[in-house]
Amino acid sequence: MSYLSKAAAEVASPPQSKPLNERQVPNSAGGYSFAVDDWKRLDRFLILGSEGGSYYASEHKLTVENIEAVKRCVAADGLRAVARIVEISDAGRAPKNDPALLALAYAAAKGDDKTRSAALLALPDVARIGTHLFHFVAFVRQFRGWGRGLRRAIENWYTMKSPEQVADQVTKYQQRDGWSHRDLMRLRHIAFAGPYQSIAKWVVKGELTEGIAKRIEGHVKLQATKNAKEAASLIREYGLVRESVPTELLTEAAVWEALLEKMPMTAMIRNLGNMSKVGLLKPMSNASRNVSLRLDDKEAIRKARVHPIQILIAAKTYEAGHGLRGSGEWTTVPQIVDALDGAFYSAFQNIEPSGKRFYLGLDISGSMWGGAVAGIPGFTPAIGAGAMAMVTVKSEKNYYAAGFTCTQTGRYGGRFDDGINAMTPIALSSKQRLDDVLRDMRALQARMGGTDCALPMLDALEKKLAVDTFIVYTDNETWAGKIHPTQAVEMYRQKMSIPAKLVVCGMVSNSFTIADPNDAGMLDVVGFDTATPAIIADFAKD
Ligand code: CA
Image 1 (cartoon, rainbow, N blue to C red):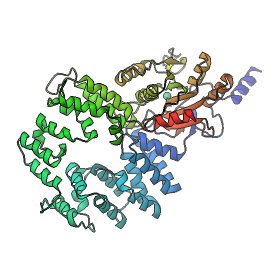
Image 2 (image 1 turned 90 degrees about the vertical axis):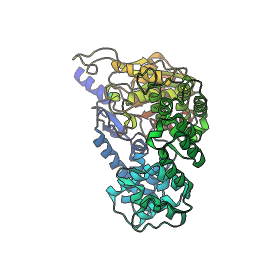
Image 3 (image 1 turned 30 degrees about the vertical axis):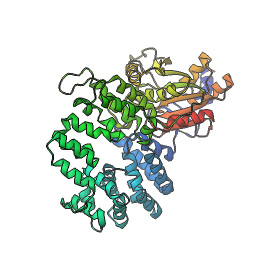
Image 4 (image 1 turned 60 degrees about the horizontal axis):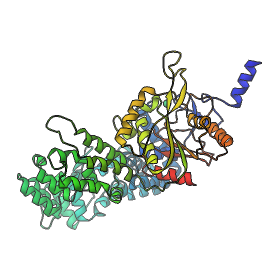
């Protein structure tokens, strides 16, 4: 009878390699997960992008799949798709704006009449700077021809801004992707008038007319300057930015000192290394003090829509100055390093701590070490999971963190074939600096295990941990477990008499989830969405 009862047990409670019900689909790892709907996939694509691909799919394949989802959203409800693109892009929730520009371009080309108009109308909200506009044009031209609507949208992109704002754009971002302001301003049937016309004349023909925007007048003067002192005074007089400074003067501290006075937050964060190289940012200098004060300003960080990932990249570059030999060497200022660490957390939307008990389950299995979050080299989903978990660690008091590891080498010598998968505690602490956490995360690669997304719940059951909310940071490619994650949640709820919730923090823009879409106690969120930690806290609170 044993063959019968064995088969009966499997039918009653299928392992992750068999579907739990007819709503599950095969994932890329040989297991079964639920499918996210196209709208969730659109969110994942807008936020995580597909640059760098994933462990299971090449960049190209993952991108094509995501564009197919964009296509289906635009076909199903074009206006809703455009609204979502604008919402995520405009709030600065994504590390990179390119997926939003691509999706908007698609809607502006292939949507129905209303969708196309809405997409073109939203152009200035999604393409906020010249570079974005060039990306958009490059994308949209792959999907459609010029046409009256598109030309008018480009014209509006300029004329809805004040002449000084346009002057700012045309001096700062001159060309990208084979497109320039000159190309766009020369498009037939775009007619600029008044102050816009003088700007267009300068952009297209290099002609300076009387009464042209001050920014352009200053830009032209600065470009002709060879003297640092004169350059500094022009920067102050005309409010000029780095892009207007002749390259040979970018090694002058006096020039950077003048630039820093009114430097926008994102530019400041991006240029910490440059300002250090020229000797402006050094221990105990006024400039260093001002920079760390500005980084400490939570409101200013949020208002500038700096994404936490941009801060992470800046911190990495800045800290690399320490201990490096050669001409680019600088001494890092500890106050700036601390301020950057704090700024990472400020860049997320404001979190109201829930006060609930969290089990943070970090999928650090093999697949989480492939590909890159938002195409950032070396920033794999596993390391990203550590950074995301830290945001909750910083805001909540009751948490326990553990990773998917393998305790034993398997039968065939590999780690995943037959090893024992188990949760291993990860000592995340709110006192830790993010940089140290990420280093510790990298070290965990040596211990990566198979993927069993049910483990966090089973581990909590075994340890009798009282948990209100499980957060699993994963690519949802679960396969190695004897029971499905949703069953594990159900079992946990019953045995512990706690109506525990499950939050799945998707770290890869694929179409799978371990959360049952029909269970109101389960939620899918996207990793590195600046809104995610706040959404998790709200969901945990009800
Ligand atoms: Ca995996």
